[in-house]
Length: 472
Image (tube, rainbow, N blue to C red):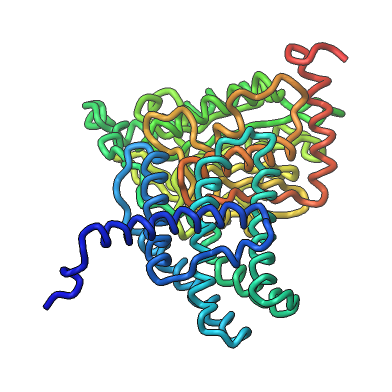
């Protein structure tokens, strides 16, 4: 006989309604815990049914919220992995807690408490933090992290009867076990990428009309046309020289970005008459020098001969795809060009006698360039850490995320390099968080001698760029 079937339907419905009502009350307790309200833990209903309901509610919250916040969403199994690892971490904490308290029931209690809180913490981190104004984002994020630490400590103290040493152990274990997830974004969806734009720069018939031999023989003339107008540095003035290097022709974003950055450097940062662009793109193959390793070496040698080496600064901006082997992609099909390594850039700068150097690299894994390039006379700013991807290299874009954060809509006031670069890091972090991307973690290195040099450069940009700041 089916005993469950003999229970009146009204009783079954009543039980389900009771469980759902209890779920709402538990979630309300979670909200109160987020506000550090007293005597909340005693009001939490602990049962296996509630744990399953809370786990399901949290998963549903993430599923729906990440779907709503992700453009062109495509289901991603990675979310299930994150969800499972997070649950394992919570079980580990519960296991340690039961050993400290001697109560097996505390495992389920901890699970209930944590999953009462997680849906609300997720919604704040995923839907609220990314929309904070740029000026408040860093502060807001710090407050969010400290708030989470406070909640962990509060719960641990309550469960362990105010035993601070044991509570500190639980909190440290909580933080340590959760650290691998800190730089990962929890989502069941990712943004669909339109691969029809990949290689779009090569879509027209001019691809098959490229005369490779003529392209190679044109380079000396194109380089002369670009380098001959470079004006020498003025003695007693810290002049800025610029080289833009957009080396992947598969997407127009690199060509556009170099154009925008060169314009900003010339019109707003005092590099007018002292800038050159090297670009790989079919649209410019007959008018602009290739962004090749050899042309970069030649251009740097020329700038080194024009500048006052003790005074002037070279600003080198490189944008392309990067590899996990820390090489910069140099693509101009059908030409076969060498990739650029950090050691190549260092050798070219050293041989050109360029002492003061600002190097910006917009590419995936570009943090791997820093070790080879850094010295006390350099500033190096990369779009990503050595093991992270960066974003924005879509064919139709005007900038990569890195370039846009740095050079789009520069304020009409005296430029401060380190402050502007740190502000760009905040912008990128905020944008990646809002788009549910794995953080790229831009890296900034400033040599000990370079800090003082930047102050002199910033002063001279103001004094010797009257068309922008007026006369002083």
